[in-house]
Length: 438
View (cartoon, rainbow, N blue to C red):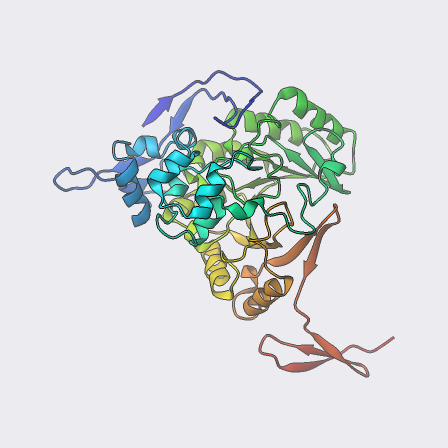
């Protein structure tokens, strides 16, 4: 089943109302939804057969969605066909963005209602219908709900917080390019996300339509990289670059790959978690042209690891793209060993390796999300030795002011006895390791 869709191309966008104008011409491979063999009653999600997932053959049978998503669709989008629901552009066009919409879908707490009624938010509200289906209707303390629904705590500015705590603006030689490390640059493709996280480090930038994927701006970034031969690694982020159409993303990646000293490319994205419908076979075919290409995904809680997300990550992995997850440590969301262990185990089952565990950056209005550093060390200690080493992320603080990522580990060195180093294992036992003092 194919459709042909052409959307007029431009290279600019001026608001968060819709994603940047995009152009894509050609057939779009859709999911085949096999109807149930019953009395013909409507079904929201059936068996999925992928048409051209690389490396897979035959029918892949697994649950296609969650009961929560089925119930949400029945309640709020009963007339929407599977074909529309599974269309990533439909998901973006129907994002939940207003107090009125949220009042219909959620029983709002007073501090949520107050924040939504406030017009001075630094970060806009935007949630895909898919991700909204995972949010609890009644519980304002549900982890996923806390990450996407604003509260009045966003307007409290604690000591040490700043709009640009990492000093990115001070390390930006051209608009939308950050050069903080000698051999790496961060390229902001645009400032649009399908779903906005309330703890976003770039809340000063994203969602305001100020950083657009214009040819002129991006050419300035390409020119800077061309004349800076120390740059060997480019991270394309934003905003979320995977919300761009394939031809726009292809244009960006092809220009970067044509620079001789750029050895490999990375993409930073939360799309598989909040908009898994975007990870189409066509997108994977576009991405796999630019190996070595890595994708850093953003997962926060095990409830994000749904059948839809599993399918999305499987497609990316089958396209030969190494996947790593960057998780932000958030109070009341994932700040305990058991929750983090569930998350990392589910990530590994989706072929995503836990990469970084970030201490929450001191962005303005984020104090209600930040844990103590000791809590992060406690979680790492609760993982090390109690699960596979592949599952243990590196706990880092991104130093305020542009100091870069600083890794932190529990102290496993107990001390020294003459030429022996005294070290502690995950069970708390002390061992001697010969380490002569020279």
